Image 1 (cartoon, rainbow, N blue to C red):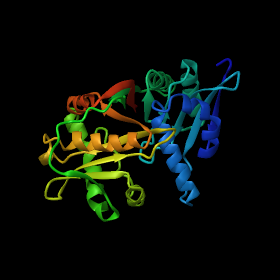
Image 2 (cartoon, rainbow, N blue to C red):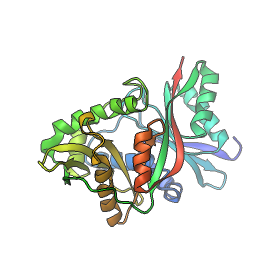
Image 3 (tube, rainbow, N blue to C red):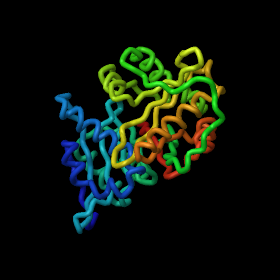
Image 4 (cartoon, one colour):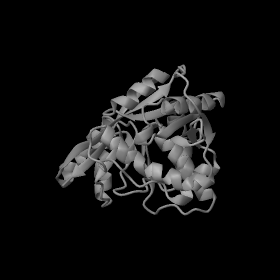
Length: 298
């Protein structure tokens, strides 16, 4: 890997300082890494311990510039690394580096073709095969197109709503699998812990759409802006409330508020879910980059 080297970090602040120019150059494409790293940095400042397994990666060229990045900070098994675009040889070298560190990697998420190259080399070293669990697509909102109005309004969820929010977080991934034609649990992961959900609720970044009776019928969340970009998600409507326009109106209103704050808006969709992709396209979201979640089967 002539001219390139892998720099690993265990301190989120040191990583952000080292990769600042790289992350700022594409804040939409880097949204997962920047928002999650800033969240962990904030928690660390609040005295919340960081997992010993966490690491961040900067790929540095011979001029000292960062040309790729990644992290392994996922809080649920099998703790997949998340990789941003990097030179092909760096993706291959990363597979060798983690193999040399005796890190067990059973899944990897992130940008194509980086994750494909990484997983292919890792399976060559260890055996097995890599297969796609999900094809994801990152979108950015251009000009917001307001949907047909529906009864009700957007309200900020509060700490008193933590039980309902927890149930809907848990249902979100299972229902998303079904809508994409996969068995429930294929891509599901643990909902955030109660303390983390309470922090999000206190920050005012989770909203309900309530109907004309004041009953919550939909949940939309959004991360705080990171490098001027806020990512919307989760977006969840219970099955008995679907098809009524709640999601379109909630996402539109949350997005309007984010843009009014001066931030850009992005979100991920599952490429296998035509319903959500159609909804977001109608609101003005446009594709930015394709990503994949891969699992390694041995």
